[in-house]
Image (cartoon, rainbow, N blue to C red; front, side, top):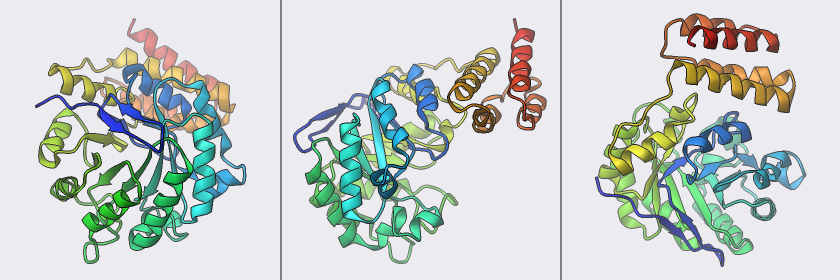
Length: 330
């Protein structure tokens, strides 16, 4: 496979280069600062994202911590916003820019019902004129690049993703990420990479392919089919913060990446748990449970360990369980 060149985004005065073509998707309840810190260990130049941010809430001062944390991090971090009100999106985008965002992304693909029923996320797939107006106004309000994430449409019967994407490009979008399913599909069925290829062929701006990319083999196949400029990895990275770096390394150098062994996975889970406890107090254990459940896999005794970790309400017990498992491997 040929080496992918850096992705150039001119912005509205502030140019940006994406040196790594493998991008970490925003993941609600997952891609917080601590998770990004771990991902960055293997992916120093990859574009990462904050969790998706409600533009109206950010305008009102809620959820500001997600954006204010950007100044504490190295490497490119994007802020993904959702809402259907142009003025709220403008103010939130400006706040993201002033906080140090590498770029602002508008979510027009989230299938979650509570977001779509309020007009945000994938609901904008049914409102192309409003979607274009938001992109046009926000792109003019900030100097950093504005990108958009979409799906193939609201449903198969009414979808016209090429026209929708062309409208966003004309409105000022600098890059479009396409998830190869409709909103109606959610995450069922398979991602339609051939449809992404048609969108890529129709646009002049960079296109990132998303959906069903779980490893380097998938990434290579997806890139060959779509001719996309890069890929975005989502759910497959949960419990595997090394995955972005792994795919990037294997695509660039055509050699097998050394996946963390049992001891490294346990140490990673312990580190993440302690960081979450330090930042969130005892609530950090509730957040850490899902990460430990995802990460502690693929070694003898992992199932029994996960069973204990997800059921304990005592942070000290969780730490002890992980430390004891690590000692067994020394």
